[in-house]
Length: 282
Ligand SMILES: C[S@@+](CC[C@H](N)C(=O)[O-])C[C@H]1O[C@@H](n2cnc3c(N)ncnc32)[C@H](O)[C@@H]1O
Image (tube, rainbow, N blue to C red; front, side):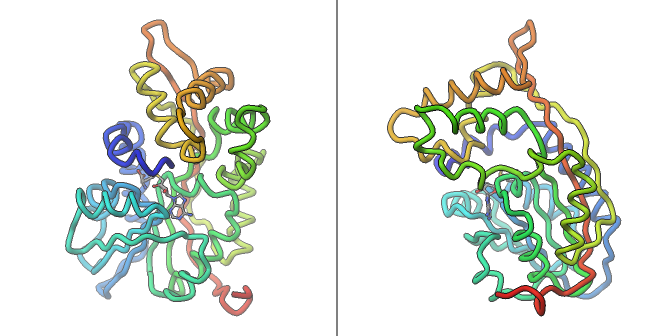
């Protein structure tokens, strides 16, 4: 994610994305166990805070006393605090991969949510272990991930090019492991089980994000790319190459000029059935 693009990302939010988050979170919240006890909820990768405040919070029952919304980028947290404040939401800078942060918050949360953020992390075993540690026994985790899409193949090709290779040496750390999996649902269930989670609900669905034309699509690529901030000086060439390779690998332009980006989206609801804290060396 490009840290300088918080307001652009906020404005570029797609209808398809909002509807999907609304539908999946709503279904998962209804399937979760809620009682009258107080709940503290974690939102991982909140970015500008709009989803946390406008979608997640209204779906939560009154027994939710607080949502802690974290993002790895301080710029996003700053934007969220200024544009999407609420007395029940606390925005904090934090990296879900950070074991030290996790240790400080052990068993603090009963529910965890994450939308369109964990696809920026390759090591899902680490993510699931850390979420296991953060959740209290029986805690539940609802997440939505872009599992596959033309942009990952574009990144792969950019990382092999002589022009962009110097800025993308660690590119594999910033994409989803599902880019390499054949049976996404089965492999995710196996991984989750090793990390102490039973998957109650899982689906991989095809969804196409639509853009009115190349310029909006390029702006979108600019905001979601984990690599743009590493490119020195003018980033136009990098975005143009990403755009061209996305079209080569499955995105397409309609006769009216609009662009379609076909994606596979993984959504799942997992319940913590085993406490990993004794087994994982922290
Ligand atoms: C595409 S945005 C999604 C924001 C929001 N959840 C939504 O659905 O619109 C992904 C966010 O995840 C954040 N992120 C990426 N890696 C992260 C990590 N390791 N820990 C916490 N946040 C992370 C990025 O900084 C970015 O703001």
